[in-house]
Image 1 (cartoon, one colour):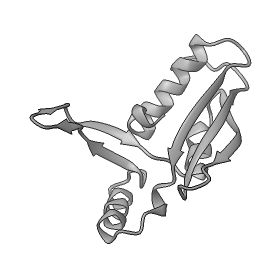
Image 2 (tube, one colour):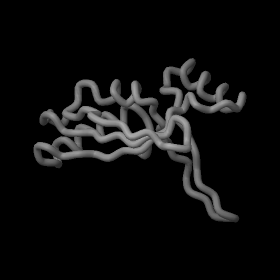
Image 3 (cartoon, one colour):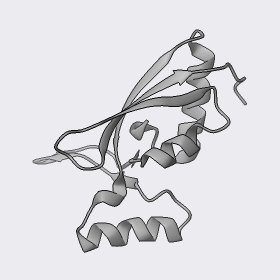
Image 4 (tube, one colour):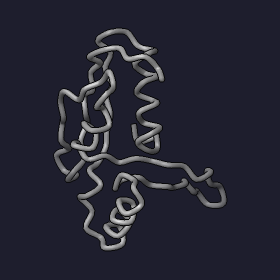
Length: 120
């Protein structure tokens, strides 16, 4: 879901996945609660996102290795409650969370299809 980039694209992705999958389908997603950071510069970034109407963990990044780099793209880190909110009104529900043992805020979510909604 992080690669969906933002809440709007995430909702579109979830609708398409619901249309393309059978009843009882599952998504296994991994994320990190963005609020677990402690660096002031990262906290300021989260606060700026919220002020601009974005989710706190909405990032715009690119990957670089030496002289090679990707285009800029959006990535989304979600707290568990934000994931629940993103899933509202979709055919999906988070039914289980597995917390990472050594990385605070990191988790895996088991997301189950509970219905079939049409693509809008």
